[in-house]
Image 1: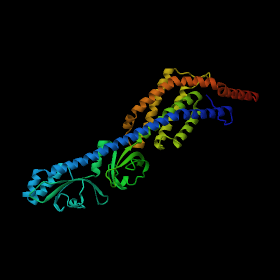
Image 2: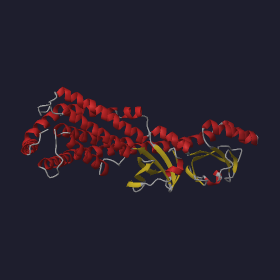
Image 3: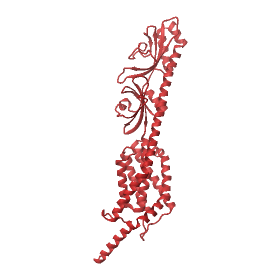
Image 4: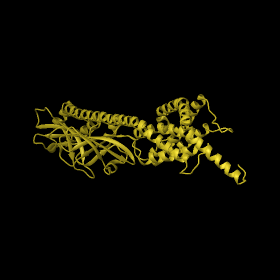
Length: 438
């Protein structure tokens, strides 16, 4: 079907008007539904972050209870009492080192009645635990390049024959500890003192996370919990920070929301996909190309469903032009100038096939963008791919023929007749001047 390029022609004006109507209709009908879906996805993402925060908070409390229990068990060990009364210092030191290793703790200290240290498995520690760690819980130790956070517990040793006072056990909360939290919660975990990170499960370490620019979303529970968003290596994260004590120690959990962002963008594809195929099928390649260019610019510049990602955008535009070609082929005209009407089952198969190919093209974009193998990108997209194929199979076989019939009847006298009249005038003029009509 030939569509003239003259911008002032009736056909061109009708084409531009139709494109405007299509876009306005899509915005009026599709955007509210997609907005609701986007809000639901974000709600689910923040719910997952909150659930991870509660799980992490419980794990911190469990670790503190574990350290306190270890202090009680250590203080009540008969061997410890015997060595304190009758043993030699070297035997005691060897015993405490072996005990520290077997209990998977990082320090064991024995304090006398005046809070002086008798034995300490970590003599190079920056502070004297017997003098400084009077209360159970979190301890901040100066260290280079970042401070250390310890969980400690203290318990008295019941020995009437000596002046021995207490035993102290402690566990350092370092990168190894937060990596364990990540395995248990499924989220990235970090610990900070004030504004300084001291441990993190991010692969780049505290140097990387310290350079992040946070955008605070909301404060919860009177600033004892803070929601934020940030990006690391162009990957977006939702995070929640919460206090571990009454001081300046904070913990943070972060959820990578790249898959959610990808899902939000994929939701738009169903709408754009259908519009471009119908345009190419009913009005031909030229109008569909212009519609594709307009859609791609709108999607790239003012896309409300997520940030602009060039690799994904390019793959989607390639896929959209593929859809246009498929729609134009299905809507082609015969030698008599009439459209070759495909059967509904042919449209259904076409819808399923072109949707499958389009999904693989966009999966290449997601794979390159997020640095995951193509097979994993395809596997992760299986649920949406199935939904997309089913929806387009129905739309192509049921909705496209109805739209074609309705648009042909309503616009036949405006677009196709206008083309016929222009062709007729052109033939008359050529005959008048004695030229051959091609």
